[in-house]
Length: 579
Ligand code: ARG
Image (cartoon, rainbow, N blue to C red; front, top):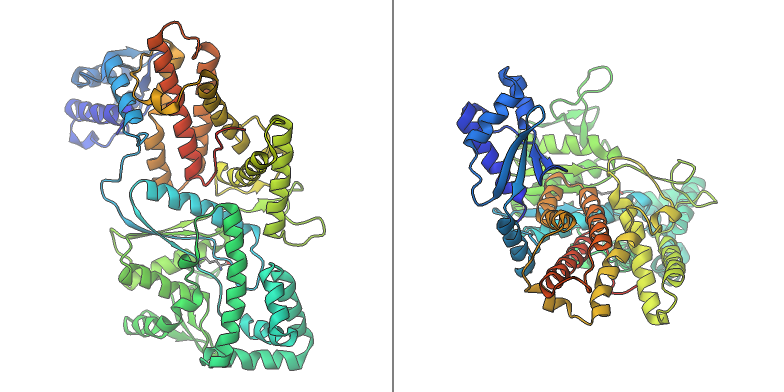
């Protein structure tokens, strides 16, 4: 593992154990970057409190037992009990050379690769994807990419809402319109209009409502003609969703669609099993499970309805079938659900039920990756001016248009084709990055100007930073690859700071994989770009004082560009070579 923090943490933990006993083995060494040395460890503070000893004394005991030969050149105690650690130059340069030379950029494959299912996007057929689906799509895709980069087997699952009572009215509406006209409307992504028209007829026309109800019965009964109409409806909307994924540069494909209907044949079995295990029982005509620990306002146990009074199955039943399938048939160890925060209780109840049924047992685990809402400038739900849900394809059109304006302003000499490609990368990248860079659980304000700004923690800033590093090579007439084998000499503190930042990349990805928080990667890339800027302001690269220093600095530049591009790539964002 390239990040020296790993080796140092291990050494510090060993020293703490040696000094104070195995019961303190798990103490967090609390390592961070320091302005006085490369790192400082603050463990002595918390440990001192726990042991009732002055932290300086604790620090001295840690240092007395610390074995960092070959890693550190200097270890000092400072202030009330900080342990300051300065890396050995040869060690630092060696780690850097390995990071650059292996082509892995410090990304180490997981010691125990897992089969991970990432459930994301999950729009509803014949309905416009709303911004919640957009968030799920963007966050889920970044997580899938990061987990894959760490060597896990990632299975993407698009839990499309493609089943249930609305399909009765949607099919009847399709028949009223004529199949050709309906297909046309759906394939261009006019999904909301289609849905609204059907809904209006259902609410206002009793005969239509009756037809719709009969249609649902035929659909659930497996009537072939009805199924064919349903398939057509689903096909047209998935085609639209796929076009959105393509434009977004999202890795979901048709093969990843496993909608609610996929679990249909399993529902009866699931219910039989839950009943046999004594988990499901009748309540007010419906069949319910009552997972432990969930109660309503009056303290009464809260039900998860697995079969409704009318005999139909709903969203909870499907999710129970899905989790059972994923754990017992697919054999996944980690289940990740990227769905908005309002569904937290639903997933908590599904997970508890799965545990009670014995499907979900360690080492397997299930996690709800919840996220907040997208707000407009008025801090209310993000809507169009007229109050409609924002149509995703319109949003993407606008992103590209605004991206093009930015590119024209910043790089007027790019030819039309190059400018178009960069504009797409900038516009779409800005939308994605704005979503990924904020702590996902919080709401965030959708603000075109801020997300497209060239300063601050934005996609355009990082993309320009990357292109600027690449431009050094073009200006010097040097091929990036030729910089790769060079040795590093780190004389200046800012070179050292950049090097330490570069070595963090692999650990940051592991952190994202553990916490499922992509904003940590964004924050890292932003800091890396900042370290690079400081380095570049102080250290001439092409005009360095010697050949050796020039080669080393070019190698630092190359590694920076590689890490920026790879990091953006893992967020699903392109990094053009020139802008
Ligand atoms: N279709 C659902 C919705 O629009 C999201 C599906 C999330 N995934 C799941 N396994 N329930 O709210």
